[in-house]
Length: 222
Image 1 (cartoon, rainbow, N blue to C red):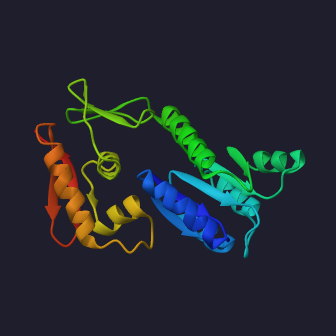
Image 2 (cartoon, helix red, strand yellow):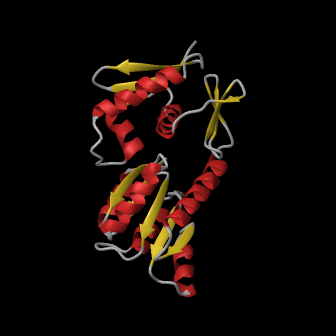
């Protein structure tokens, strides 16, 4: 999954991003509210972790604009404000969850997992691609009724291709999905994960074609 972390405290943002990355997510880190509004207007992360007190534009303003634009992306608000009225304002503005600083990273990760499961269950129960069946709520994939064990980044890549079946996905798009925008990951990393995934899905009714200079495309075999 791709998660946007919007937090002006750089050390906290990097700690959260590192923990999310360890769980296999691609993470975009943004430190300014105005930049966050622009980013969320053009990108479609699977979840947003959003601080309220930001330079440029408040997190509540960013959230209000996001909901006004019709986005249903799950949002966890972070704030140092612990009064009930502040939590009510945040939730009424469209937040899905609310976490008061200081917090334990383990609790944040648990809330992220819960929201991603809830979002997946709401959007789709299962998705069939080739001979594979995705269970997005459980974040598992099955082949002929048996679990297909995939490392986290390969699962994320397969999910990206499955959601864009028949479409060319560039190496930059792959790296953004796996690591987040602006990461220092090189194109060789995208090539490596595509190579590994090709081997994993042999016999699953799917193929990943290479379009030189453009990227890759997953297609169902006929």
